[in-house]
Length: 450
Image 1 (cartoon, one colour):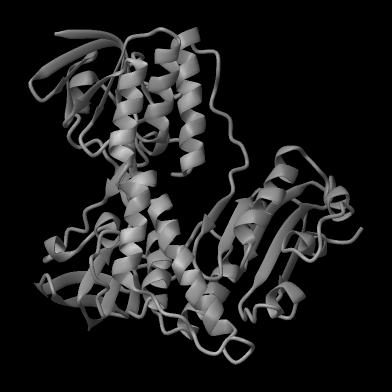
Image 2: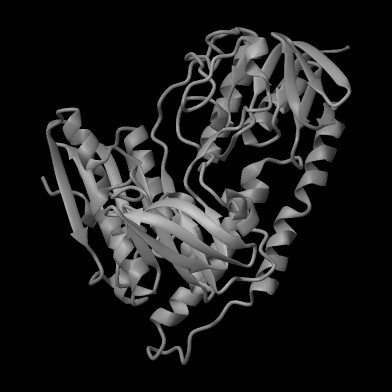
């Protein structure tokens, strides 16, 4: 039996933050991961995805400006792009392992499972600690359909050695939309099958409708109300069966990507042996991010049932957990405005309340919505599908929410986040001088006049 002050399961942003902070405070720390060290975002998620998005953006811009100074659209060499992507992802496991070792954190590779409330087994080793932190992230949820084994997940898509000619995305969230844009701009035929009537449900409905139009304009086929019921074929050619309007339909694919939601990655942990409660969103925690049923266990990042599954939020939660373990429970999880972006082309970005949420709260609001393809910032790059919607409290002039569609939205949304967090009024933000011509300089035109 190996004894530590702290055991951390998971080496992504949340887990690494806790482990490093505790070790720097002099605690003995063990960290475990069944996957290559470094977490999802940096190796199998947001970072490598954004590398691919960068190439897709170049294709999109060249297509938009063809015959407007650009002679012909550029194309993607998928194999070269994958090699470039690997220059970011391949060094991460060794780099992470070295960092942990240099700090004196003891590392363990393998699947962790609880033996008791304070004891974990990994491989042949048994570890015990006063505090255990779960930061295992998410995994794709089972679809429970015949032929499910033929699907690849987001990790598989990011490792494709060649781009298939025909791709089906099952799902209507971030992953499906972003990967659809990457694949389509690289030359694939892409179909999205989404079970619901509204994709990207957490985002503003008006902007999502416009984004779907943008996708359809480049040949992406978005099918709503489509419940996938089976996949047949072999790894190189599949037939996807789906129900829509009580009728069965099929679509052919060379690759089918599971992008229909993720759940907490806890199946192998044997949480019942530690008395740890799990809900639909993940490990059930209190305001201190402490398990409600086992006070020796904390959870942070995507595996906990707080907040959105975003990397900055995972790091934030990791800092809370580390502080509470080192100093006693003296820091609570607080809701804070968290901007988020869907890296489609154009980008969809959001922070704060949607119009629907504000109305559900009974707030008196000013809603400003406009399509902006005729604005200079859109016209200069010939971008056809751009828009914004802002929600402002009619009584206090506080900005409650901002929703943007267009190039640069992922940066402009950060300005709105600062305004919401620090309670800068719409009037003060509108009257702030910003560099021109920039996407940020459009901000003053997105807010209501007095």
